[in-house]
Image (tube, rainbow, N blue to C red; front, side):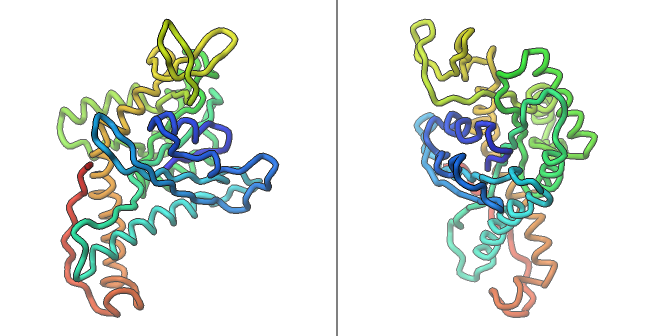
Length: 294
């Protein structure tokens, strides 16, 4: 899921991240069109190939988020959508004749795009992450990082980390879920140095030193998207697709989904009346093992 106010280049970055048109510009609206009164939720399915391995990916965009005059509780439709996916999985799981492979539409990662103001997080950013970090893995990302100098970027990253800590907001990878010392050492480095990833997205190629590279052309040169000296896009891509892909799925299944599942089964001793076993108390349901990446 990609989140953040309009104009931060979410669609472009997601397309760059997966080297494919997975996030359609059509999922947004033209400037001439009237801005929707509510937050829309659009899911786009796609198959990407990484190192010869095919992976089914769903990108969820939410045009309209944070674009209203009154943005009070604008995260509620998003929280509702995330919980609805947990509910779908739960209903399949408690079926007597359940499928061998339950369709998994749960949201495993939410990239939250922060405006590169260089000052502080907006109250809306803090409220959103405070509510949603309880139900989904939040990965904060500073968008359009090429608008800041290296010093401004470093200071802003520190300020964002401090604000998240002061407000009790846990972003992924969460400290309490580190499984061993090796995990803790690796994740501490990510939490203290990389987060939030300062990135630049572009789907245009330019010639640099005889090579075709993705980048943004400026009067003073080309900003190379995949050059670590220019931005942290490559770190974000490795983090989401390679090093932490399976862990994102496991934390979603073992922590966020299990929290939802326990609450739902405790509320009424089972699914609500009219759904599943009417009014009967369900026996303990064995948790389905977390699906592995194919």
